Length: 226
Image (tube, rainbow, N blue to C red; front, side):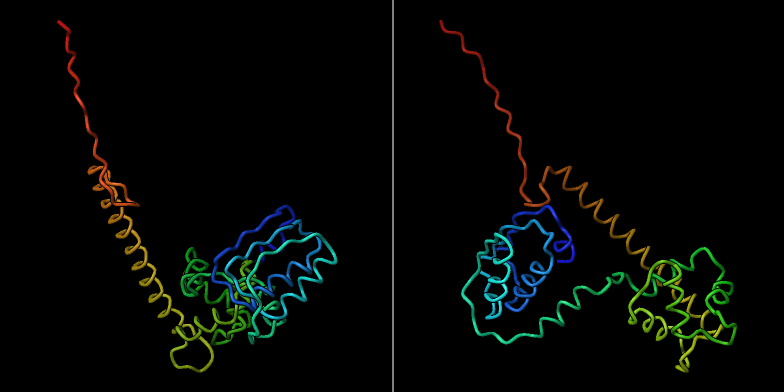
């Protein structure tokens, strides 16, 4: 939806039979209403039921531009506050990656002890959640609080709210092992898939349908008419 609301060239959008909730259909339409620069003219939502608020928003959109929508009959469905959902949609995206893996990627080319002192801005005995969050921000990757909480929970062994050097070094070794195990599993999966694919190719089997392709060669004999 974030991409859609920034799109200024798309004119027709077909969402037929998608699992969209009634309340979110209204949120979608409200987003379209707020973005006057959109070129969208047709929205098809066959088999998608909308809530009671949908028609009011649609009327407002149609007062501003030529807009055609296909949807199912309205129902009196209770829903979450639409303003809250719109706020969630507009929030800055966070990286969809395992927090420990993300920390490992930032640290990878540094000695663990040097990396600890780099994060520890006030040079005290431990890293605070704010210092961990600042690391990602300064690296150009601002992250949600749950990322920081995941790292703190993993490394702060004595649960005193900070990560001392000893805990950081132990945690770094654990993260290295997790990363190696993940890399090894990825290679094994790729090897298995490659072997699987090669077997299918040799047997002339289509992977998507599992149908066997059989080439039939028909030999025709020339029969001379006597």
